[in-house]
Image (cartoon, rainbow, N blue to C red; front, side):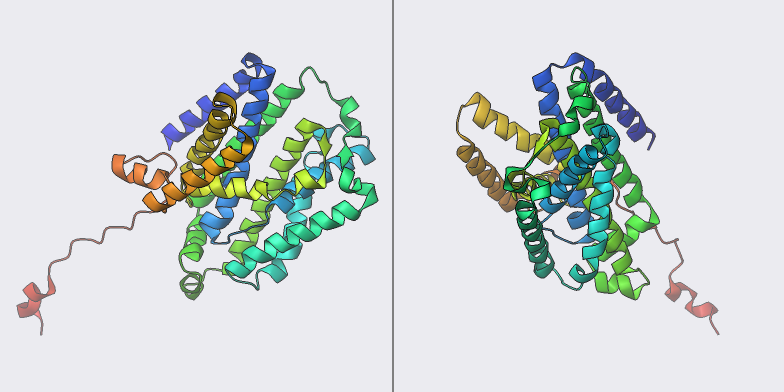
Length: 335
């Protein structure tokens, strides 16, 4: 635990100082990586620890972005101060839709989330005060200090990424986390031993939505513009799923490895080799198939088991029963 705290502090110091050392292009790239990592951790919380696979988490990216833009412009408030609106709006929406969605199981829940996302995207496209299909510029951007814009976004993204990893580590090490993993493994068995399955999943669903909404708001704040096509793009959830599945679902280290692989492939194919984005998607699909065939659990679990690595493990070890003399040896002492 002490080693984890030291490593955490070192990474936080690197993020704090990195904004002053990196150029604008590197800062923007690093910010994107950290935001996608945070989204992937939130999707992993829902799918990897609660057993709820969502195909529609892009809806929270869009709601968070639009919530930030509308509130900031309407109140003529600095976008930095309006950022808390994004996770709050997503949490409220998630809390409302959880009641009907939780009546569905497995694939039905996944598809219902995708349908809900498409409905919200269509409504936003048809709503004039949200900019319609043309989208919204951030009018309150005049309140921003553009000289510090990229460093501040990098710090926010870094804080969000570290916050999600640290928060999930503490959450999964708690009694709630133990109950949550039991729900993932077998919800009926968990219910039989007194775990409130619906309550646990509700909390995780709301937290996951809020985290994705926060990351989405920061991402579009960097563009100073949001549109329905970009905000509710299904590629958001595809990226989350790819990163988690490749790295290792149900682990905290998995999304970190998956993010490195994801952006490494993208930069190699589109920047170094000069191929189009279409080939980049082909490469992602190929890597996903190979990894799933070689290790269905992702890259991290076999590496962890092979080398005995324990970085952010949240698993529990069953207590060792006390040594008791065999009953047969005491047969002569009975009666």
